[in-house]
Image 1 (cartoon, one colour):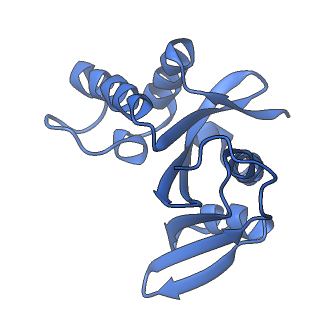
Image 2: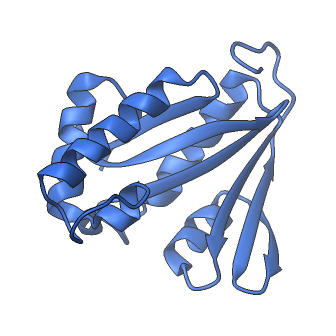
Length: 165
């Protein structure tokens, strides 16, 4: 199984939308939208609009998580402070429990170093065992406050910075 990250462009957005609609709940992959629950034409359009808007922002980097060349989720790296990126991801239900999340986090940490970050943080919950396991396998230091879990990765100082704000 080969896991890769691809910058989110229009062809990948089409593939990502298809996997989101068939293998995820809208509440797992984007902010809530008006209308009935579940996927419908308005929520599908909102998914595309959400990602196109994110792509236009310079502080956000969104990637498609591809498994064997097929979209299986997305990962973001957002600048939240100088040198600090926040990451978050979602994975299609059919790809969960197979190590995809852990490999995507490993790739994200490599990309974060390339972007010039010295720290990456992630937020999850105590009940999200899959997320916590993927973060732990990549060496995260955890802080727990009630149900909230913050994972921190301190990265080696980059030799050069290509996009750090």
